[in-house]
Amino acid sequence: MKTVVFDLDGTLADTSKDLIASANACFLARGLGTLLDPVADAHTAFRGGRAMLRLGYERAGFGAEEVEADYPRLLAYYGDNIDTHTVLYPGAMEAVEALRSGGFAVSICTNKPEALAEALMGRLGVRTAFGALIGADTLPVRKPDPAPYFAAVERAGGTRGILIGDTETDRETARAAGVPCALVTFGPDGRGVEALEPEALIDHFDELPELAARLLAD
Image (cartoon, rainbow, N blue to C red; front, side, top):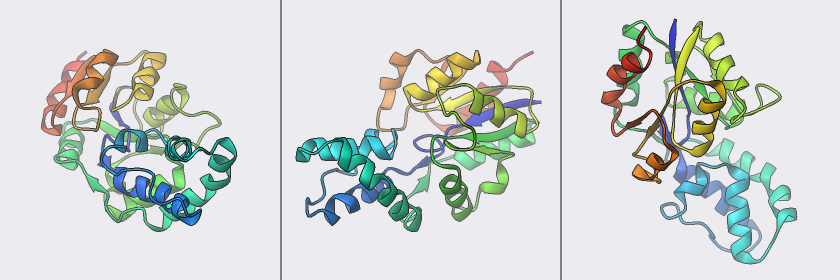
């Protein structure tokens, strides 16, 4: 079965504001104020919790020790406030349903911890639309290692597929797996993702069903 594998943060859903709020909660607890901006720093939010903490603490003159100390606190805060501002991108679920109706399997491969990814998709009410979900800690390795991608295909009942993402990590994962990659242009990096030379760009999810059929044509 042909399979479309989605990244989560910055691809299916705009999670940036809740992620940034979680990092800022750590800074506020240390009396440092809000060191990250939910709009200007959104691109960093999609690169993980440690990346956000690192950026904030660099601005405050702190280092790696504070990043590692606060990472569990960030995850705890985020888990409690995971869907306060998060929204699915326009047309995301319509595209997923169109793919399923067209005979595709669909799954998620994210570098968000599995439990948090499961919780978020459940709260958004869309988890059952996906045949599998592979998180950062589902396997011993994470993206850009290709193993999580292959697991996302296999556990969804697929045999071959494509990866839909928004960052260099997704591009490198697809390259390592030897599969086509399409990157969305509606994230904070905009059409800057074109420089990563994916096989395709997606300006709106209504383009995806036709694109998937083309990239996975027999």
